Image (cartoon, rainbow, N blue to C red; front, side, top):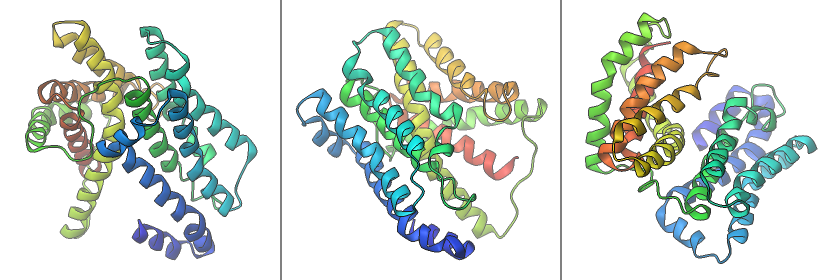
Amino acid sequence: MFAAAWFYSEQFPNASRWIWTAAFPAFILETLFYLASVFEKSRELLAAIPGQARKALILWSTALTPYMVFAAAGHTLQRNAFLLLAGLAAVLTFWNVVLPRRVAYDAGFLVVAAAPFITRVFARIYRGPVDHFHLDILGHLMWIRLGLLSLILLRHWDPGPVSLWPRTREWRIGVAWFAVVALPLVAIALTIHDVRFAPIAGPWWRIALNGIGTFFGILWVVALGEELFFRGVIERAFLNLWRSPLPAIVISALLYAAAHLWFRNFPDWRHVLVTAVLGLACGSAYLQGGTIRASMVTHACAVTAWRLLFK
């Protein structure tokens, strides 16, 4: 993170002061909050706080704090953006406190959780003084941890073990399902012109570092968030409901694919078809491994291969 701040401050010297005094501290703070959400020990400490409303209020305040650091220190605080962020965070954190545990309300929670990613609202909230710096990744990290803690601490949902590092068996399962789905994914994506073969160029060590960074960035953020909701919640709910796992895997894969209708230009049917196939593999990895960590590996392998080899 320090290296990234230094790199951008060198690339954009007119924004250097803002990067170090506003963006960098906000990223440090959000990273700490994010890590606290994925470590079991810190979740246990939060769970020990008495009162559901009190827990929700704490989560809500942590959603706003990095934004306030980011915007106040950089003199980019906008009332409408702050109120929008505060309202969205309040809905997500207090949803399971105010509403009863029913299927309709649980489905509504998932819609609320998906909405900011589909509408890309965080790009309008987390704005820097220079157009190059729309740091919506801060919003993405915040929203994932908020959803995770709302589900586990306030809804008392059990998606299976959640953490950043898969166990050996989960690595094997995740990689195995990627190997199963890799050729079908490539064949379908090339046939329907969703991607074209265009491997990144450069020295081998730079490509290797790019691949490692991409893999773990996807594993710990994108894959964790998406696998939590589509496999740990949706697939798990249908697995609990039916004896046969096939409908649960198919439904979660179709809903996962439908969320990518907005990936490029709506409706992006090509990408929907590709992600549906990936969803089937991730759902199978989750079923076999029993945790989202296995499906996170499959997910991260697929996205990393796409980033390195295709456009």
